[in-house]
Amino acid sequence: MINQMNVLGIETSCDETSVAIISNNEIKTNLISSQDFHADFGGVVPELSSRAHLQILIPLIKKALTTSQLSLNQFNLITATAGPGLIGALLVGLTFAKSLSYALKIPFIPVNHIEGHIFSGFLMKEKPVYPYLCLVVSGGHTLLLIVKSDIDIIQLGTTIDDAVGEAFDKVSKLLGLGYPGGPKIQFTADDNESDLINFPVARCKNEFDFSFSGLKTSVLRFVQKNYGSAEKIPIEDLPMITASFQTAAVKALITNVEKAIGKYHVASISLVGGVAANQMLRDELAKIAKSYNKKLIIPSPEFCGDNAAMIAYRGLKLQEAGYIYGFDYNAYPSLKDNTFINTTGAAF
Ligand code: KG4
Ligand code: ZN
Image (tube, rainbow, N blue to C red):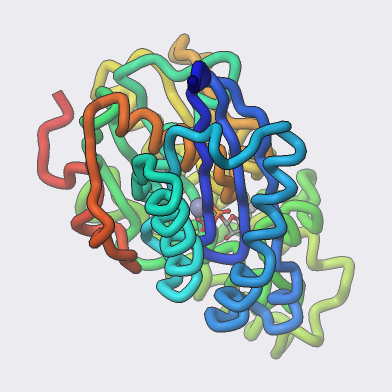
């Protein structure tokens, strides 16, 4: 007899293969294997990503089972990311998860990757309280949301061009610092030089939307005007340029968060997604949360970037809410139709 609730989570949407096990609401294992070789190409190469997932997934599942001292026949639920992400990469995890669920005769729940991030604060000891303001900052998305319940998510704003993580990656590339750009920029930036260059913060028609492509172009123009090209930037100037870019990017995010807190009553705030690892963003948001007396939940670094624990958690919640999915469920590249995020609903 099964007397435990064991959930297997699989995440293969981009360049991290991740496998997690949640047993009786406790994260037993969260293994993440990063495909670092993409750095040689200056960004993620989709086909290489799919091939790497194919190679690493089963060994990673075996390792997760050994670590958790569980066997496959002790599981009650299989979850996997179905989108958004790279289609070839998604299909590896999704197909494997469906096959496993079919063979084991247990339910399978497809999970929206961004919803995984949105609820990743619940993986922490101190959890978000509904309704919470959620800032999603990843490589592909920048969203400002009000999360009212497990299935009621209202979008206040989104990016009208580049995602903030994408801006970090592009600016890093144009400065010759490499990929992934976020950590490269953060660790090159000198906090004492963060306001030496006044890069612009864009304003959008919808007061909660974001725009980062103008900021990226400003950095490019600054480099062209002052040095001619990136190769000619003196090494001692890089900390000033990266710090000033980081300040402008963080300011753009924080400004909208502050406007939203002023307008809507929320019980707490959560910062999620890969860019949530950024120290300046964490510090600035903490200041705002403190001044408005709101609880702030930011996942620990392991759960900010792509991970399967957030997928297993989200899948479990959907199952508890009674959702059932068939084996015809397909992978999808963009957020649009397969999400509980409501882009037209009223915040309250
Ligand atoms: O959520 P994530 O791991 O993958 C996606 O779903 O996109 O986010 C990846 C993004 C990349 O753009 C990366 O440069 C950015 O997160 N990132 C950071 C930092 N660490 C990762 N951005 C700014 N500062 C960081 N410390
Ligand atoms: Zn992500």
